[in-house]
Image 1 (cartoon, rainbow, N blue to C red):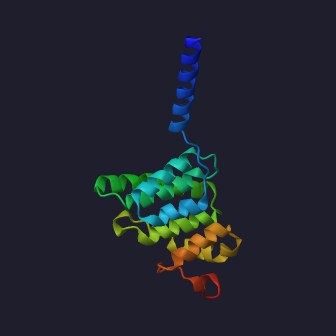
Image 2 (cartoon, rainbow, N blue to C red):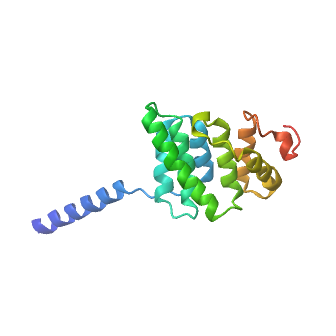
Image 3 (tube, helix red, strand yellow):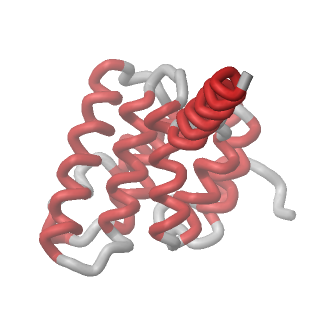
Length: 167
């Protein structure tokens, strides 16, 4: 009897421990964009964990954007450059695989606008801006909301560009 109790206890402890190590969280675009705009490296790290574990298509594009955002939040120059390069490769790979993904063009636009000149990541701003403006109405509401929020502080994309009435 005692050995059965110990077995059950060990079994429950093992299962609980395994579940605690691998929390499967659902990917939510609103949470993704909140992390992107937060300016908090911990929020970005948590969202990176969610994206890396989520069974979603186009995972590389989201991971790439988050890594480049993280590059702007860490302190060490070596880390900044490493995260930016890794993120750039992932986002550009995702865009090569699906050049019609307007959401990824928006993410690249947002990163390009704020990227330091030294990384030379500003060449696609006009093209990405044009695609976002042209296809804005076809995007998911959560992405539209993120773009409208972004317009409030952008110098290359405004609410008027999206032909929407003012708030």
